[in-house]
Length: 586
Image (cartoon, rainbow, N blue to C red):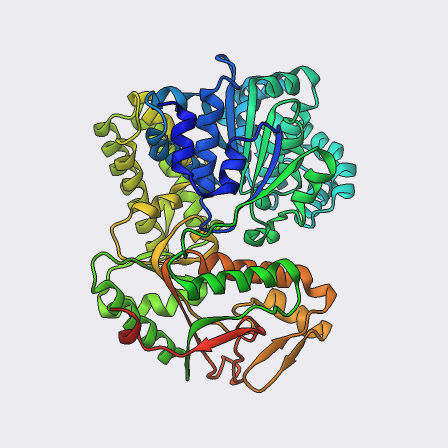
């Protein structure tokens, strides 16, 4: 049976997916709401183009994305879904390069960076630091630091004119002061790759080599990522997959309206997936999905109607107690998994303490990706992985690596309240080594899989494989993952939405505040902040396979003022339905 016939049967009845997969257009934008089968369609598209000869035998497909977790998901999806479509799975997988933006930039700098600066031949020895790292002070002046800061601010504010005007100054500092000392910043990796791709022979090579490029989660792309992508677009097939409603990295500079930039620049066709497979049997969740999307897309009161399960408690202790009762009810069925998703990590600390008191097993992923313990773990794990192995992933070497990391835990955390970060990351490392056994190919292929994950700080993706039925994590860390049930607590003003929205919202007069509630009134200057918060809520809700539960309390805050319910609960058209666990969870 032909691959195209298998694909057609697999996607039968989904007009939009089939239109995308079998399109011969070279520039395609696919808008794919959560649960609409984007990943399955993407893998089928790759299989179709590879099987019909669109990709020459000596060329490749590049699947690229902003986040490490999204890149890991692409890798896993190819392994999982391709066997349904083709026989020679490994041959197809070998034709697809998967990377996040930084990983791809590092790859091309390893190969061609010497043409920018001879020191790039030692790139594997470089220390990668954040823009505001104090270690930079040893190498650059305050004037140099200002030049770096201008680019960083331009990226975070999505200011293209300012970014373009300051890139050469940034590169000058990077080239003269940092690269020569084997130091590079995260922005510097992308700036260097963009500089490299300005060389016509380099960019021409990659435009020809990657005859199809798929950019997944395109809505999360910042300006440096966008400039990098533009240097790879030629006469090749380029597909932009994503969903503006799921743009939750605005604080990192994810560009507003980035799909419009593509439409303005290239003759791209647009295809919107419409069939929601995740909530096809749950009309209440389907209606909630559509309502939240409507607010995110249109920034005005919606004419749609939906309901959400909300429990209103009297104070923090009662809210935490209620959440624990729900967790106990859910996990009484061993087939169920539940995630408690918080807007910010600190909001889950009291829940974690109560879980500990109750002796309920859970996975704690409340740490932040800029926590020093989190970063130190990766440094130690990567170093010991390289020490224990020699380009091949042999299980006895991986066990030696685990023992070495355990022996150095004193370097990773010093405070008892940070021990959980080490414990959680160590467990994810164990799972990574176990999952590496499933990688098709040689021990060298398994080694590269592990090296990619550790080198790109992708261990959180391993949460998909943990045994614990209960996960406690932030919404941002949960993106791309799913559980049967999701609990979203602390739906209060200044908590969700965060103070980063609530403070300017008050200053703009864009809210009507009552004693214990707040209603949003859509001031134009609040549009960006509101859309980001509603997008975060949308991502949280759509992590649930079966149902989502919200909680809130209007007790006293630390300043003895009554807390308000979130404006996100008081949206027009949204009905709040009280619930009891035993009547919902059977």
